[in-house]
Image 1 (cartoon, rainbow, N blue to C red):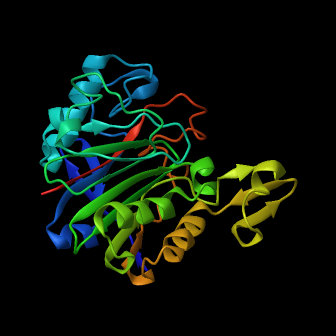
Image 2 (cartoon, rainbow, N blue to C red):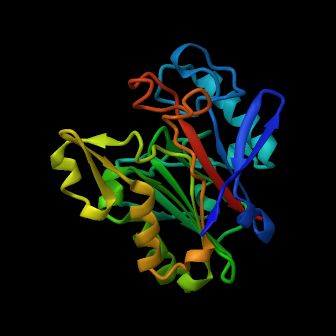
Image 3 (spheres, helix red, strand yellow):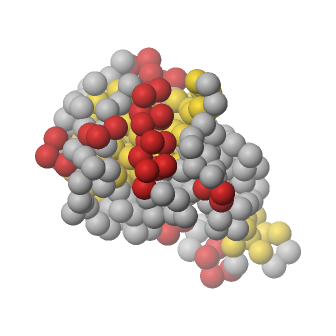
Amino acid sequence: MQKGFVRYTKGKLVYYTIPAFTKTGLVRHGFSTRLGGVSTGETAELNLGFYRKDTRENVYENFGILCNALGIERDRLVLSKQEHHDGIRVITAADCGKGIVRESDITDTDAFICNTPGVPAVVFCADCVPVFLLDVKKKAFGLVHSGWRSTVLEIAKKTVLKMQAEFGTEPKDVLAAIGPSIGQCHFEVDADVAGQFDAPYQKQVGEKYHIDLWSVIVDQLKSAGVQDEAITLAELCTFCHSDEFFSNRAHKGKIGLMGAMMELI
């Protein structure tokens, strides 16, 4: 397994990329932080959520700031309407602009897969786990929002298998990366939630339990056939670094949203 994303700054903007993905030359991609946008108040600064306490104009400008840095065309973005479930959608050029400059019919979708160049996808996070997938042989990607409920439903594994079914992806050819998200240090839950995870992923602290979502997802990816050495773990807890990331738990729900973004070149 590889450790660490690369942190970039461009003016006040701060974002992260995955070294193994960059080296392929196949994609433009990145994960935003809360820094470098125009939003104010509880969504300051780089809020990408249209349905948070912010104006549409601010969010649209924030997307422009990030897309400019990543070399992605803002008005071609495909945005997800996440339901904390296991919905996976194949997207094509026909979907470009949905949710950003035109109405979207994309619902109940927590993961995208795509094998068409120039179709940039976005999933949103603010403690939940972003998972990036890239088939380097068939030239296809997956982008996953894996909150704890979606993690229980094995959405990362299902996305790899969906890529296999739709694109002929061989899991051994997949690069995977787990982005900044809440770590076991701060993902504290009650027994009813903890009981949905196997014991090795739990650590009891008094009457509460701390769950290691990163390890759960790594093992799900491996069970789908992704190789250990092909997985990159950011090892950045959004709660611990809530000065740089939006964290639903650290900020008690008064947050904007960050985005994981990727497109084939």
